[in-house]
Length: 335
Image 1 (cartoon, rainbow, N blue to C red):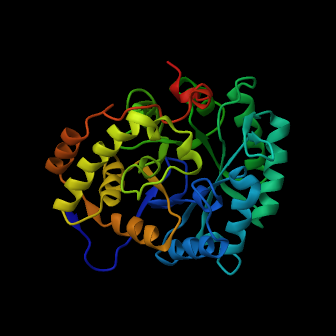
Image 2: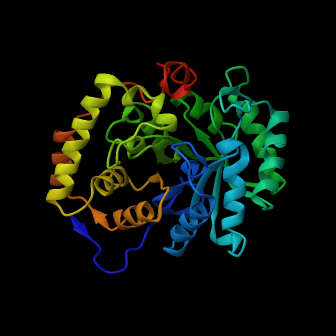
């Protein structure tokens, strides 16, 4: 393993054959709007600025993160920045009540334009770089949802079309309608189901992967605590948590032997799975941004990758990555 000792430079990767060039890792912004506990808004702006100042370009958000709060925070962070220097990736379609409880997804063509209009206003921008349905709406054919986004691409309000948490068949159907630049899906040492069908299909079709959850929501390299979403996650409950914490300890041991943090090793592992994969890391503090940036300077050898695989075999983690009712909504998990 080598590390970049001078100024760390984020790698540049393209989102598929048709998508934009972005820096890797990208910054996942969901945690800046309370998903894992409260974050001071000024600190959230500083986090975004720190990533951009390090040369980062990819900001990933969703219109439902904090019921619009996340987009407004990003707008504030970008007020004195050059819009063309940033790639904004936005998920839409998730429905929630004022209590924050998710109630479903809306992928109807008429809803696509409505969601987009509010996103553009909240972000204070004239276009979104990558626009994607957060989940598959089971009542709406993916062809209709993607076709609607394609119409907004033609009108200049969207630059590229992405997908999120969909299976191989859905990816094929969507790609037959319009160019798809990437599929956003969970991928980490603890979550590797994407390797079976989804990743091969993406590579066949020239579609990139933006991998979220690379730290398994803080199981790897985290400081403990079961707040926000973690309180609902099976991986953070009972015996599962005990087992998974021990598993994360193996990652920490390997990392310490190499002079890096467990989080950095986990980020580097995901990035090493292919140049078509861009890890998206949720950072909530300036320290975490620094950790993410430094991870970009780590290159793992074949021997080190094999050692990591031996220490953390596939399917070693216990517990589903989402609660049962949310797992049922994932097209990517259907077999």
